[in-house]
Length: 245
Ligand SMILES: [Fe+2]
Ligand SMILES: [Fe+2]
Image 1 (tube, protein in one colour):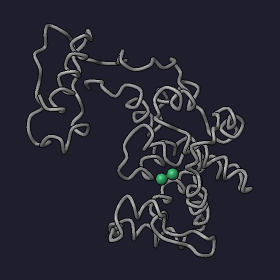
Image 2 (image 1 turned 180 degrees about the vertical axis):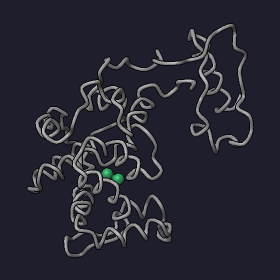
Image 3 (image 1 turned 135 degrees about the horizontal axis):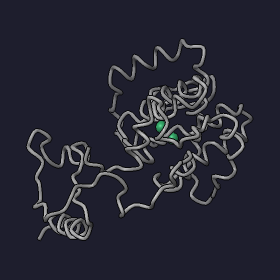
Image 4 (image 1 turned 60 degrees about the horizontal axis):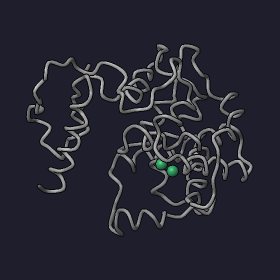
């Protein structure tokens, strides 16, 4: 058996132990398999399909808060917390500290590609428009230096994408747009505080940001995902990523 076959067999065994069948969304496997092909359907084994909480994941409270998602669903969050702490140390306002704390949440728990746009959309109904705007445009701005604030093209991007990488035209377009916008510096400040915040020896706790989040993030009383905002379904998908429909 190849490594991939072994991994698939282990996964099948794990799914067989569940009392529900699990079907993966096409986007989970697109590329590994041709998304145009019908999704392979293992035998039902007389089981129903997953329609809610996946027992392989930690259960979330009935009315989840933003921090519950950080705790139970997001991958390593030191990066965003370190960025937020650095921003605070650099004396930026609360809105920007919050923007730094949220700027990469799509990478941490949802979808990587176009993470600035996804992260912004996730939080848009709950934050000041300047916060989601800054989060949306930090992604494009990361690729373009701004000497006026000492921001250079990231070393890490040279290593990650190669010296010849050129951002796609829509990133260039959005950068040009953002550069002329009144909130340009808010998005730029995310980049400035993003750059130096990968120190593995520094540990930051979420509680450090309780007050700032409390004042600047409109937590829905029904719980994030159960409110009727235009982003609620995205939070539900993070909570229940294997729901059949
Ligand atoms: Fe980012
Ligand atoms: Fe980042």
